[in-house]
Amino acid sequence: KIPRKNLVLGPKLNIEQMKAVAYACLRQITLIQGPPGTGKTYTLMCILRCFVTMRDEYNKGRFHEDVESIMKDLQKDYTKVDGPEDGDLWEGEYFRKEISKKDKILVVATANVSVEVIIVCVIQHWPGAQVLKIGGASRDPKLPEYCLETKCHKISNWFELEDKTQKKHIDIFIKNADIIFATCASCQKVDIKAYTFPQVIVDEAALATEEE
Image 1 (cartoon, helix red, strand yellow):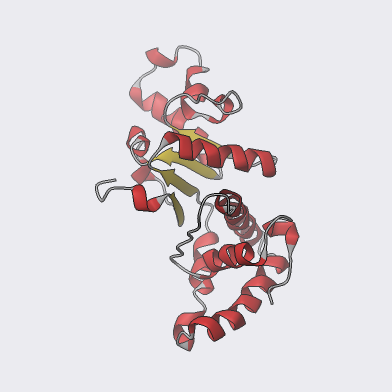
Image 2 (spheres, rainbow, N blue to C red):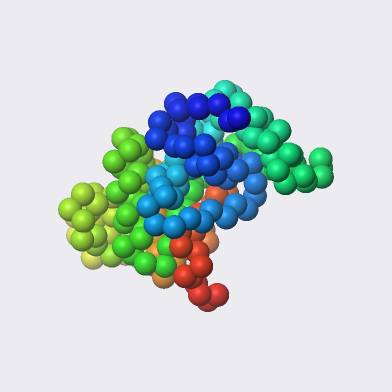
């Protein structure tokens, strides 16, 4: 049984959703699927919150005890269910090394509406989350303040600035965010390869083409 450590994971998660969050922390690759209305978006938000919490705790030289206990309890359950070799079991050690860096999390989807649904969920259930959306202006009135384009256009004489000066401003906006949201296509609007993303989440991955 996985303990209900709600401080990090969220009070609305059921056991299967808690397992999904913990698996995402344990494994290098995790696939989550479910029919509409099963709470995938909320679970995704909790995964993001876990990633950021663990990264911040490591930067302070400690690991969050709630996540630690969940990962250890899941480790026992994981052995019974999937029966991996002992050497392959604790993939969390790989994750621990990665989150020790002050890096960003990248969340992408094929459709802009899918990206915005996740952002709305994040800002609704996670006050203070530092998010940034790359891409065109949002139709949702709650989201413009989180859009890179909106932030850039608020800078005086933005369109008259040299390219290198614009890139410096964009770099600052990205560095100040914990989570970067974008469609697969809008990732090309900035030099996304210039940044390191130890954790990448692809929403509705089955809809993405090989090219994307």
